[in-house]
Length: 316
Image (cartoon, rainbow, N blue to C red; front, top):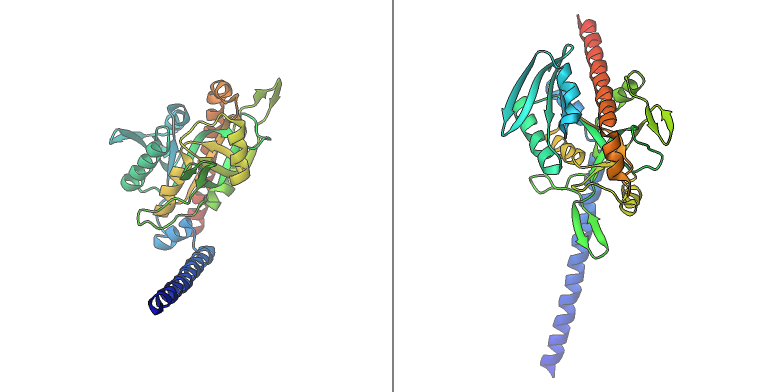
C-alpha cells in the first residue's frame, strides 16, 4: 500500500516540476523573442552599416530582372559594357551615364533568383540592389501597368502545410536563426523611386476601354514559387500580408540582401490581376508593364547619380 502511495506522490511531483519547467522555458522564449524585437527597433539599416564601414566607397548599383524582357532595356543603356558569365549566369558590367552598374537576368523562381543574387554579391559586391520586373496585382485598386514600390518583401509559401492550408513561418538564416517575416526595403531607394515616378517616361495604358497613366504605389510585395491565378488565394494574401502585389523572386532576393547587409528595393509593374483572368492579362500586358518598370528604374538610377554628383561637388 505504501509503495502505491509513494508511486502516486512521485508521479504528481514529477508532473508538477515538469509544468514549472515548461512554463519557465515558455517564459524564457517569450522574453528572448521580446528582446530580439526590441533590439531590432534600434538596429542600424543596411545602408547605415555600410556607410559606417566604408564611408568613401564609390556607389555601384546592381539591377536584377527575372526574365530577358525585364533586363533588355537596361543592357541597351549600359556603355561601355562587359559581359562576365559565372555558373551559366551572365552579368553585364558598365556605366549608365556615369553610374557604375551591373545588370543580370536571374531566371524565374526563388531558387534561381537567390543563386543569382548570391553570385552577384560575392563576385561584384554592389552597394545596392534593385530588383525589378512584373507582378500580379493583389490590391483591387491596382490595374495592369500600375507600379508597386516595395516597402517590404515577404515569402508567402514558406512554412507548415496543414489541412487548413499553409501556416507561414519566418525564413531562417544559414546559422539557423530566424529572419524577420517581412524584409524592409531601403528607405532611400523607396524615396528616390517616388521622386523618379514624377519624371519617368511611363507609357499610358488602355485598360477597360480607357487610356490612363499608371499609378505608383508603396506597399508590401509577397513572393512564392507559384503563378497566382486565384481570387481566393489573392484575397488570402491581401488579408494575411496586406500585400499589394505578388511575384516569384523578390522575397528571395530580399532575404539574401538582408542576410548580407546590402540595401535593396523591389519594384514591380502590374501585368495581371492575380485572379482567374491572370494568364490572359499577363500575355497582353507583359511587354508594356516591363517597359514601365524599366523606365522607372532608369530614372531612379539617374536621380541617384545626380545626388552623388551634388555630394561630390560639396566635398570639393
